[in-house]
Length: 135
Ligand code: ZN
Image 1 (cartoon, rainbow, N blue to C red):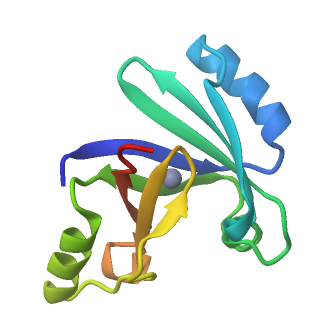
Image 2 (image 1 turned 45 degrees about the vertical axis):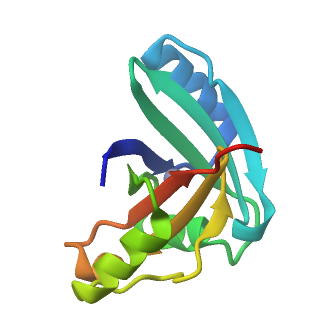
Image 3 (image 1 turned 90 degrees about the horizontal axis):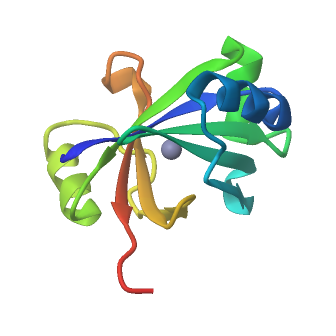
């Protein structure tokens, strides 16, 4: 894995949190995007070279809705950039990690993504993301 690509934070109200993080980081979100398949609305901020993603649930059975219900607002996942997501999934499976979606799916911010089950990673939901090239 290359580096931390972004940190994902679950929020109740994306509009309010966009205003809060704009004040906190001193920059506006550079992108807002809805991912229908995941039932989320997201916004992305740059903080220097680093990225923060805010996620709000748009449906009751969205993974973010379930997370908020159980744990409340807070850090939801850490995403690592990978060059070749299929290769990385195969490698991690061989190492005994449980991959939640073995078929990479299209996430926000022009990425192919896969998640590891937090039970196998000290309670941290890990996202792998690979830039979709050439479109
Ligand atoms: Zn993410």
